[in-house]
Amino acid sequence: MSELPPRGSDERSEIEEIEAKLSDAGYELALSEETEGTWFAALQRHDRLGPASAPFAAGRTAVEAARSAWLLYLSTPSLSSFKARTA
Image (cartoon, rainbow, N blue to C red):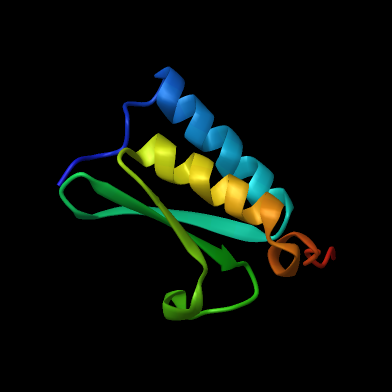
């Protein structure tokens, strides 16, 4: 299994930017390589457990999966209309 791109690389920086945007929207981005050559990115709401029900996207690399997850978030009203609760 592959690892995430190294810290400081352009790809890792892009993943971290996407993670921050999703976190601001109330989601955690969970990246994993389940099969060689296919990465999955799950969107988990901060206030919910249960990754089995989390929407996910896939890509050939970790950054492609993260980009796909961001596009999924933007294009799915049931995801993008959720607003995180603020304390």
